[in-house]
Length: 508
Image (tube, rainbow, N blue to C red; front, side, top):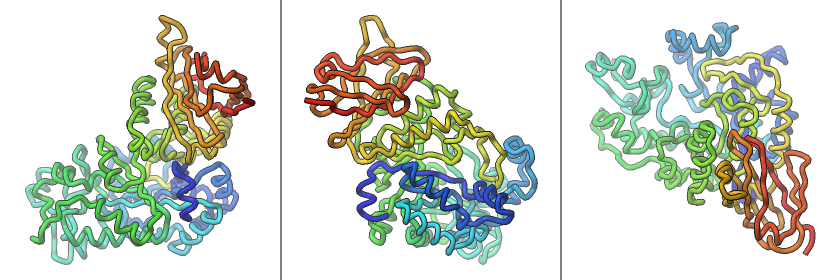
């Protein structure tokens, strides 16, 4: 991605792909195993023409057999996989892409040369390449387990006896050792992983090397559970166990403020995206992340009440502009299964027409409902929801407008349409402006018909005539500027109703 491209796309749109399951489907159509080279030109062209700026092929890195064996040994997980894929066969079980054995492109996907060719094909279409970094842990069969046991959180026999779900015994070049599974402080460990120790200087140096190697091959990374590297989280999770087992001096400062500038010295335009929760988003932004997950917006939209959503969007632009907005991803259930059709559309209009990075998950547009586990390499066939696909086609066309990427956004205030009518509280209205391009997004995010007045904050609104054309339907309105700037625009929408108005001046 060139400096001009990054400058021009302040709020990018990312298309996420589950690499393994999509290539499995491509391979079936080809009658052979598919690699990254088999993402067709037509597929990449479609992504580009839909207005996306980056592609995130999830899970391209090498994994090992050990994680797959761990999956087989867990009855509850196997039962869940069978529910997701009733026709599951043994060959459908795969190692989780978050149990990485090497940051080398998986041999199943064609290796490094195939990734380089994919990046070049994306670049020709002005698409950037986003890849994964899983900083907190590695697979239990990663070479560092044998070669660098000092990089891992160590335990003892009492830990293993007391918490067998959080510790395991491994063989290393130094002999048998007890080490911790990767985990966060609120849940048991991930049994196919081991925990890295960011208080160890050697580990930090090695991970910085990994980051630079990844950055040489793509345009940005999505950092899995990035907040787990924060010193306070390490202390809460591991306490004294985070002191390096080899007796070397501990490193207690945060990793990201050191790592991000180091990578950007080599790649100034490189994008860092953080998966982050627990109200630690602002901290990670201050460390240098371009965008952080906005799970709070997603959760409030799921709850179905407008006011908490509106209050969340009133955050300072310094924070708001650097949020990653989504309705689904590989961790969350499918949007078509979570939101009923009416609310799904209203939630999408809200989510993807506010500032920040916009993430669309492959299958979301077509209305897939089965949330497929990362331990599966195949997914069930599902019918396309053609009505939802048509909605997303219009939505994506509107999302490609330049004012949504580099314009100025504001959350507009809604007033009761008449005394005693409380339904104005159900509205969420935002405006975008860039030069003479203006957009007004309107959603009645509530279960009842609602009315309100809103006075958009557009420059020069009070003069001339204005045309409001809904980009999501055939609705068109003409309004006097004096009326819009005075009493305001009257809105009367059914439950979960919405408009995306292109607003154009018609005369002086």
